[in-house]
Image (cartoon, rainbow, N blue to C red; front, side, top):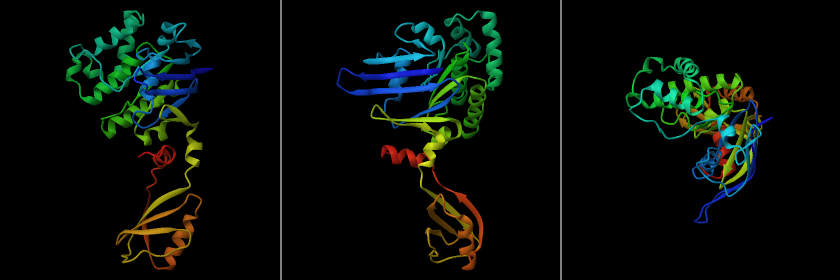
Length: 303
C-alpha cells in the first residue's frame, strides 16, 4: 500500500506563479522518503496541500487510500506534520501542548497523558514537562514539535526541516529517534537542506525543482550517478609541488596536504604505491566528497 499517492498535482496562484506543475509521486508504506529541492521549488506548497493550508488547482492526493477531497478528516488523522516554524502558544506548559493536540484528534485524556509521558521521555524533554514553552531552547522546541506531531499515533509523519538551527548533538539525537520510529512502522517524509541528513536517513529520494519532480529513485541509485570523488591525504613528507600521477588530478593544499580528484572506481591502493615510490609517505586520508550535495547541484544546476 502507498502511504501517500499524488497524481497530476498542480498549484497555480492568482498572480500566475506555478508552484506545482503536474506532480505525481508515490511513497510506499514504511518508507523513509526524502523530498529535496532548492528554496521555492514547491516543497512547502506540496505540504500545505496535504494539510489543507493550501488549496490545490488540480490533481488527486490520498493518504493511505483516503482521498483528501473526499474524506479529509480521515486522511488528516493518519498524518502528523512537523512544520518549519514554531507555532505554539508560548505560555502553555509543555505537557498541555501535547494533551490539547491529542484532544483535537479525539484521543481521550487518560490515553493522551500516557502518550505524553512516553514521548517526552524518549525525546529528552521529561524534565521540562511543567515548563512553559517560552522557557525552552530552540532545540527543545524542535523536539516538542515532533512529540506534538506524534501524539495521535499517525501512520505518516512529515518532517519539514526538523533539525534547522539545532546543534550537532541534538541533530544526531533527532536522527536516532526518527530512524527508530520509522523502523517501528511509521512512514516518514523528510524535507531538509542538510543533505548529509537525507543521505544517512532516507531510503528513497525525490528532487523537486521549479514545481516539477526531476528525479525520483533510491538513495543508492542517486549516489551511483556520481562519477568522481575527492580525497585529501595528510603527508609526513613536505612538498613544494604536487606529484604527477596517471589517472589522478592532484593539487597541493599546503606543504603536507594533497587534494586528489579521481574516479570512484580508481584503485586507491595503486595511488599509495605510486606515492611510496616517489618517497611520499601518507599518514592520513579523508574522503571529502560532498556526495549527495554534489549530485543535487549537478541535477538542479543550483548550489
